[in-house]
Image 1 (cartoon, helix red, strand yellow):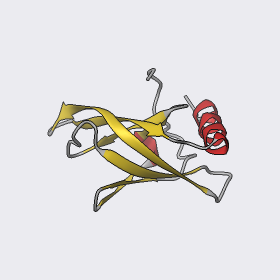
Image 2 (tube, one colour):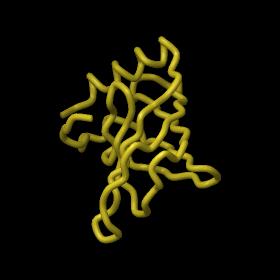
Image 3 (cartoon, one colour):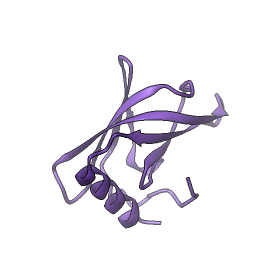
Length: 108
């Protein structure tokens, strides 16, 4: 995944990430949307290859984009937090287009 600036405008809604039976609410300012996944920062590490479900909501659309993905990287420490990189799997063509649109319209 390439590097970009975080969205500090507040244009995107918070992202909900669910790990097994744990539910995380990640502020939109801490999420980077990519055309094939997302990156986000959290306080506790998530093991690599963990399967997760993510709900994304764009600001102009009330419809949720429900995605299933795999954690491919989790780096950091308990002091500064952990940066989690996730790749989405088995997206429908429509979901892939919606995700690509979110990734390219996300403020830099």
